[in-house]
Image (tube, rainbow, N blue to C red; front, side):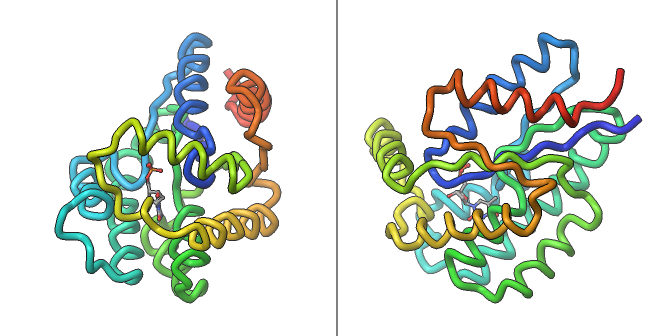
Length: 214
Ligand code: TMP
């Protein structure tokens, strides 16, 4: 039995988490065994790495190289501890980010060598690749506005990555565009500035095309 691995990508505030929640509920209602993951994180080891990457008070001096390796350490654990067994059990896996975020943020955003970034990703995931990636595309203005409103609701939680400047996020957005252009079969681009219902309808259509036969 083989499940399906679906990843969601996009810049801050693109609506990934909302869409994944809605999709998981819809798949569950339709009788699919569904599992939601987030990157970095999900496993106990991954969540500790996530804290180090984002919120730890001692993470100020983190270099781009360290960031690349920590993202992929969390990923290597997730692939082996959860993704491979869940796929073997026939589950539908929905992941809030996966390796395209590394290409976008550490490659394009931080400016690390793209060939090296790819080698680290390949080492972390082996042959575990998404069947479908949905890139939720929003304009830089929408992304910045949604991020600011989220930060206003959680003013005491510092996030090392989210405090980067707008040029960093613009480079990351270009990275997602490049990934989508390079792999159009796997990476599907959805214009995500509309309402959650509008985007959700398009997500559902894409996902139905990759569900296994029952
Ligand atoms: P989020 O779960 O709120 O999206 O936070 C994850 C942050 O980590 C987000 O700013 C994007 C960033 N990130 C990377 O820089 N590289 C990666 O490989 C992944 C998975 C996330």
